[in-house]
Image 1 (spheres, rainbow, N blue to C red):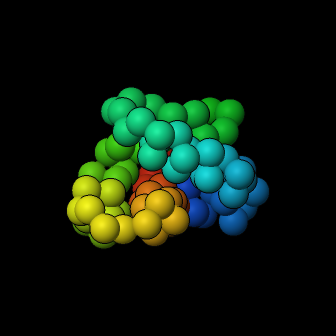
Image 2: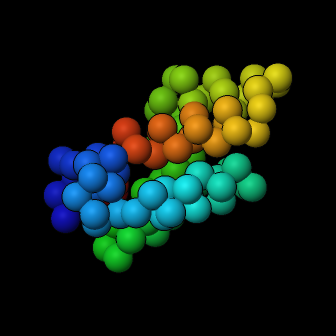
Image 3: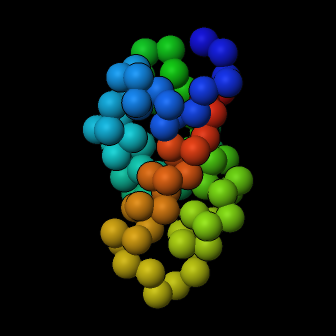
Length: 85
């Protein structure tokens, strides 16, 4: 699959589900590791790289004082804006 579409576009088209995005965000927050995460059949994303590339998400996961829900939404946003690799 070409990398031109973001994960968000793949969610809107039904290829990736909201549940898959949420699962990837929760897995990252449980233990942020580099490497590909399977989002859907044939769709892989390095969530750690997506967070690192998104300044807003990077701040929310590294600066103390943000709630778990704020961190989850920041990671989820980074995932939705990322392009699968």
